Length: 381
Image (cartoon, rainbow, N blue to C red; front, side, top):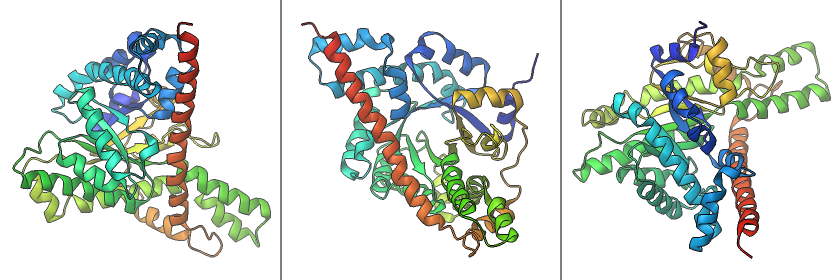
């Protein structure tokens, strides 16, 4: 029988979660099989995933009709569908949550992407989602925007598990880590337990390479001055996302060695693990498991879409590589500033954050529109 390489990754202190959720995989038993036999120990979802799951899928029609009979508005029908899926997935993963003492076994759901820049609305929705879903192993996703940071801090202080999403820049990750620590400190100061609160910081990968590679390709297409410039440009192609992630991990190590963290850790705090997201390889000339193989390491999570899960189970080359080539990673990021490359990584990260929010707003609104159409279709005349 062929080796499932996903199961080997666990030995290096990394958890594998799946970036996908639908009622089909819950009801068919596929999710349960992935959890019990394939090494999947968590689920992440987002508005794009729910749009794909619900649009044109008759499996949700009975619940939509029930919502119509209750006279629910479109948004509440949407919530009734996704909350049911999240609760059922949480129940399937509950044994993992128990067996790992709350390290794994989580299902993540995002607050509406339309409120990404509204702190108070984000706090209110995170609170409501957590209460209404009513599962200890649910994680609420809040974007790591400027408006998101105080929401993360407040939610953590209230005992809500948080998945900080859409992190691209290393500084954004650092900000998210300190928001988590401040939330824990606030809770400690109020005399409340912090030992059951969990957070991950979702650091996006492939979108970074797609953005930078497109800039490099445009420069190459316009023509370069000499062969050295071409070599420099080609040398960074497809390398920046992994280098950026390795640097973020070094920042994680610095943060967890600070007095502030040590003090809160002594009171029962769990580390906020870095989670590698956006891990499907977009460029077919690259390895389809490059964002898995290169970033295996302790106290991390990698969330993979189904195709990457299959690819990794089949041919991942499992080894502890997260702290190999760290010096080269710093050098590579610095090289972007050289005149022959001249790509401003901060501008790239700002672009990606704006695009990232938009990439969730668009499917969210599209899903609302398709639900509205389905409600009209299923409503009694």
